[in-house]
Image 1 (cartoon, chains in turn red, blue):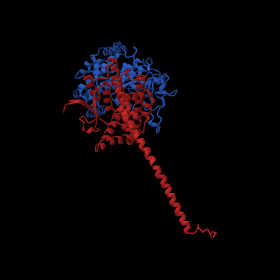
Image 2 (cartoon, chains in turn green, brown; image 1 turned 180 degrees about the vertical axis):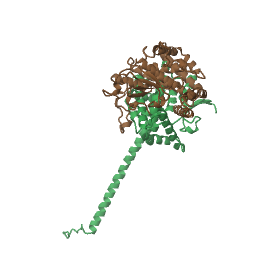
Image 3 (cartoon, each protein chain N blue to C red; image 1 turned 60 degrees about the horizontal axis):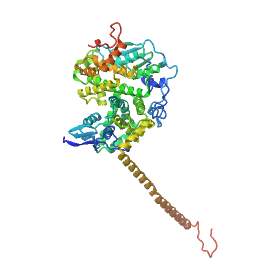
Image 4 (tube, rainbow over the protein chains, first blue to last red; image 1 turned 135 degrees about the horizontal axis):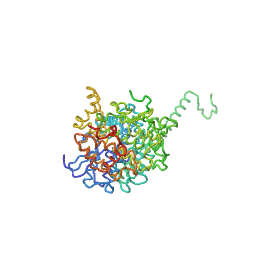
Length: 307
Length: 320
């Protein structure tokens, strides 16, 4: 592999004002922002060409890494860390809370994205079909769905009914969100004024859940009710990803402008068409009436109407 | 036949958090306007997609609210010849938790305990008409009876406790599974003989193979299968480091009083220290954190030492 002097990250594209739609990509990107790493991102949307079969792919010098743990350890070795202000006890807490999210929230996110049939058919599959190039868009969504189902089945091996698994999984996620809200409290970030690796992990898992237009949105509504978590996500986006927010707002404005123009432009045509149609029908009816003798135009000097 | 024809599905006995039953909802539930656990789903198209938020208060006179009976039994596989790392850790955690709560129970060993369990998880307890498996549901079940160990914790400490429990279960539990079932040495020398010891040939081979497939599938789904053994040991080290930092030079994790977290950590640490494996790196990793070892020894003395040399309590001599 060619040695790459610049730190590069291949990612999934972003939507809804987020820099990426994928949780793992977001983790790495947010951590890089928090630690001040000069990271160059490349939108490839192509897990097929990656060495490990999934995105993100971090490349620097001769290193090629894909897991957040490995990447953050590598960055720490190169003196880029977001945890330099944390005491060892706080580092331990950050580690513990990350695992709380992996144990309780990740199964629910997988469920919402890939197993809930309404979401999968109306939201996830079209999204990935749009992002992936042909012909990968026929293969990968199915693979991800299969992985998600395997995760659910392996966590609840004795349950055959998906709805029971769904309730259990959502309940755990519900509890996890409450615990995170309690931990965050009214602080700006989980460990005070400056963000840490835990903030990166929490943001990466909550942001897609918050911003994605999910058809079936029970957990999303619960997250929205945890206002301090919602504010936290907004804060991180505003401070560290302002460009994505601006791009998203511009794109939204353009779409609404186009829609209103389109609806405005209908009106003149509509009116004109209606008036022309009315005129033609009037003329036709008058002509018919006159030709059949219902209406007769009597010359003025006769002074009488026949019939 | 599943034990307990009237076994209530564990989901019904599992209120959302143990504090829910013992105290009113905290007045300052951060962030959640209407309180975290109440019914918040507004898009209630189908009942089942709500996040199960009728608050799980059991009605008065519900059988689960009866006082603790005197004939409660805890079922686990045979300790000397059959039980494996993770089941041993979980069983010890439940046993020490029950003893911390001052609840009487008897340990019953069954070769088919795993198949008797309602959810497949071990250990499970039979309490009156109820069969409850795994530590979390058991903690909730006992909390329904008004007994819990976390009254002295505030909300932030409870959150910390749950986070550390997730850490211990995720890393130590999965590491135990990995080492038992994915490391060739341990698999051939320890796991297969022990798991199949209670069955005759060819059932022992078949069942061991089936269990191995099931565990491999779970570890694949969780992303552990791609780890090397060294990476697993590194994760265990990192986890023990985090637990050791939290414990500091105390004997308990929170406020010098025991909680479920102490029980969970005791279960894992004791198991890892006392189980002889072909490669004892796990034990040496754990031993390098003396405060964890000391806390484990303290709990063993406090809750398991009996005047007579009784062998039902996970004593290290029981492992061959």
